[in-house]
Image (cartoon, rainbow over all chains, first blue to last red):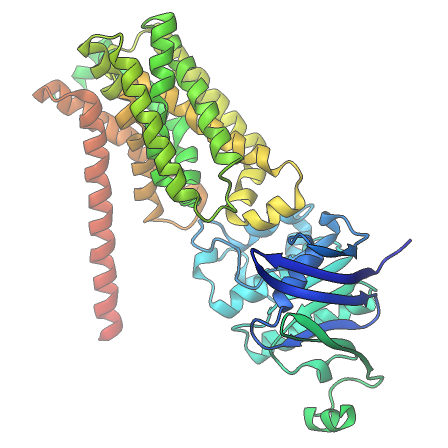
Length: 222
Length: 283
């Protein structure tokens, strides 16, 4: 069974403007796929098209996954936060049963948030809750658009660990981030975007534990 | 005692009004909550006006019975729900303005249909209701609608909540997501159509929205919000009916005015508490 996604010369238009131009790439299980690039370079459109939220105007996307097999973490939080719902109730909407909700909250060390109303979460807490929400179902592909906004270093490293966990479970993990985090992951495919297109696409492997200082790795890459 | 309780024990029509209003509150409160959650509380108002052509149509064809009003309203409600689900769905950024245009058009259309046939009293009844003359049929209708509405909530609350809190994911994952959306709007128009006989097309949405708005000021748990909203509705109905009995106010408007005062009271209480908290924090 095919478990990778392939883009063949994909372009996407919004009105007269091309928001993605001639992108070809292969996303296979193995490394974490990290999209980089400046604001407006096309990263978010690329991610949305992976999830099936964009209609291609040229080219094809070979996507073997059902919508239910994909978890998506959108950039601007799509959650209505001024909602009289607690974290646990939010999770119960997605989780198969209530014990999964509790297990997931514990796995992220946020069991203390379980009865907190969404409206009373801080920005970083909300991001971590939404991140953990992706773990409620056993997806085959996880797509994350700027998941680390507002997170402090503790939450951030917790999420990095989870990315690595998903990677080791052979799930396809694709994320866009402004942080320089390629060096913190053990295996990365970087996808560099500029001017609505993919300019470079490189695979790095770091066999050792990725806790070496950034500077060392940077010099190793370049 | 004589002032507060006796009117209801000595006059069946007042007791009927209280029970009928309570049944409507049961049917409406969770729907009102979802209207507020989906930021469509104003659309709810427009929706109730848009039921008018249906009500007028029912009148024209089947005459002035409760059921012709209800089914006419339900028909219009189905059309409005379809409009809200399909051509102008949540992805359309201009939905809000197009909707207000279409719904105003429907209101005017309703006015024409009503004007062609009915006497001024009938029109007055349709617009402002006649909660003081609820008969057997009206009570049965309100009871059935309350039952259907509550049943739908208990069976599908997970879907309704998911669609409201995270519409993007819900519509991406569930192929039948639009039916959930349609179902919610249809239930709302069902409750509104049934409420028309009691409170009239102009006021009915008041009793659906105001208690929920007040309750949402006081709690961030939906269970508490719903409990408070039902309590507020019943208090408003009671106070409205009582004042209507003693001082001859029109009953429907008196109920909505009572609910409005309750809301002002809650808002004032919140303000007071916030300023107190502020002074403590400052000290």
